Amino acid sequence: MIASSALRRRLLLACGIVLALLFPALAPAYRSQMALLWVMIVFALTWDLLGGQMGYNSFGNVLFFGVGMYACVLVQRDAGLGYYTGLFVGTAVGALAAVALAGLLGSGILGLRGHSFAIGTLGLGIAAGELAGGWDFVGAGGGMVPPLFPGALGGRETFFYYLCFALAAATFASLRWLYAGRFGLVLNAIRDDEDKAEAMGLRTTRYKTTAWCVCAFFLGLSGGAVGNLLGFIDPREVAFAGPTFGVWMVLMAILGGKGTLWGPVLGAVVFHVTKELFWTYLLGWQRVALGLLIVVIVVFFPLGILGWARERWPERFGHRIEDGAAESGR
Amino acid sequence: MENLRLLFDAPILSLQLLLDGVLIGAIFALAAYGMALVWGVVGLINVSQGELVMLGGYAAWFLYRAGLHPLFAVPLAAALLFVAGWLLYRAVIFRVVDKDLFTSILATFGLSILIQQLANTLFGADVRTAESGFGTLFLFGGAVTVSRIKLISFAAALLTGAFLMLFLKRSRMGQAIRATAQNARAARVMGVDTDRVYAWTFALNAAICGASGALVAMTWVVHPYLGLPYTVRSFMIVIIAGLGNVAGVLFAALGLGVAENFAGFILGAEYQAAFVFTLLVAILVWRRFWLARERRHLQ
Image (tube, rainbow over all chains, first blue to last red; front, top):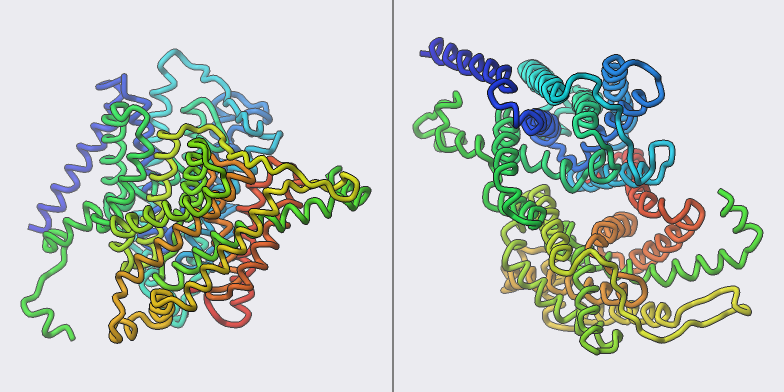
């Protein structure tokens, strides 16, 4: 039974991967949207690494996304490399810059807890956008434009589709690997009781900073890709877009079920698809709807889809229910 | 940085900046005091604080457009926002009161986006101001200018704060609020309807924000995106001053007003918002290291 369900799961995953790889051929009109979907999955997964697994609810993760985006486009603009070399070197530099920033800020910011961390990171994200919006070297408020894609017409979308897909797959695989080992257990211990975890001899600050660096790495990579995919960088609306990307990542992770591996993926898919389908019909009320959606989800549906399913059918998630557990569990 | 040299060349400019900072600081203090009140009594950090300020500003602006003198719009805006705060509590806030902090922060954050975008859609993104027509005072032979409305709004802010404190000290509801802040469970045992107290506290907070928003509309401008900086300033002030420290809130607010004005002048106006948010991060981090030295944690 167990073997067959594991086999079934693997088959499903393989089908999904094949479908994702064939997607540009199946529905070429939706390549950009699907590329963004993969980025949304990266957003939700990386937010959940801190918010769900570690219990540090960050509102400012978009900071790393923006840093990666700016660093990538700066390399493309100033280094004088060819398009593909520039893009890959730029993305790598962006990821490294984001990781360096996360490591630098880590011991200061991650020492904050609860609401201080939440509001501190909120300030961090907005401050970055405001700074970038005033700095002439990076185009100030006017933003920057990445170089044009040299390939054939339509090749750009396919290229970035596969790039974003690879990115999402890499993020998912690494997080899965991390959660399966000691690292994931330490993060969960920090979430459950940080003081006890520290008393057990775990160097919590080091683990927290590492987790933030992992998160920053993938966000930095996705920043470089998205900057080139959209073809335009605005400091407040695209790169450090707190009101859109920054809020969406939190919302998607919670919608899917935070603290689970598949939850953020599911939340990102559900959110992105609904958004693309219905957003245009809201005629300018999209952001009002977004605010309403946050309130409704947080107040009435805080467990998320997977969390709710786990509560409803615990045996499917490998939790065994024992009769009279309540009495004997005291 | 040339502006810094300008400050040394013309010291009178510093006086101007100082005065402007102090005068706006009193308005920051009002919103911050409201946040501290809700934080202390309801145990909730209201991220939509700045949006309440913004709504108060719009209330004052609409009353002004209807022909009312803006000064009379201040108490009316406060009354309107009291009702709005009550409704907000009954619709959303009471559901997150006993949840964990993150839920309440995220819920009020969603609320802030909702209100901000509603204002943007309904009122438009234009910058509005309620002209009071009081004119300007010229001091030191015209080297320092102070518009009279800023002085009046400074006085009005202090007056509102004093009125609020009198309410908390003397009235029956004020006593119930203070009792609930000290120990909600004991207050409930003694027959205080804490749910009503929470509703009152949140509505009172909204009213204070409404008054400060009306003052903002008179002295500066209102626009839909003005909220978040006010939330961040309030949070910063409360973090510096601590809960239940009225004098601390006032001085921290005045200090913040002055610091912001100087930073805006020296760094340039485009960096003023960046300064506010960076200062928030700096203060939180500084406080974390300071507390770590005393082996305590930020709670």
